[in-house]
Length: 93
Image (cartoon, rainbow, N blue to C red; front, side):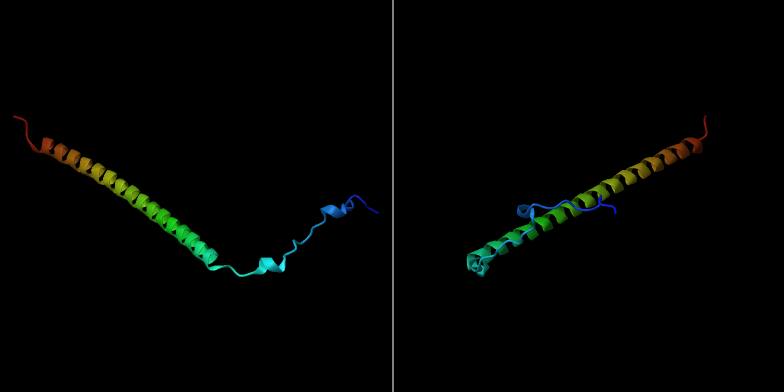
């Protein structure tokens, strides 16, 4: 018989125990507690909305910067093409 997979006996003090909840701890939240919880939730939601807006703004500015770089490169290419065409269009004297 294989005894290597059996567990060693646990000490009774290390056994899992469920915390005891006293009846006085089960009372309802007071108005001040509810107000502070609502304020905390409102602040968290507001901070999350601000973070989302900042992320959207950063994405838009990055997209705008990318479009500006692309437009500048296209304009440089068009100017180079126009100058090349202008040089070849005129006959030398």
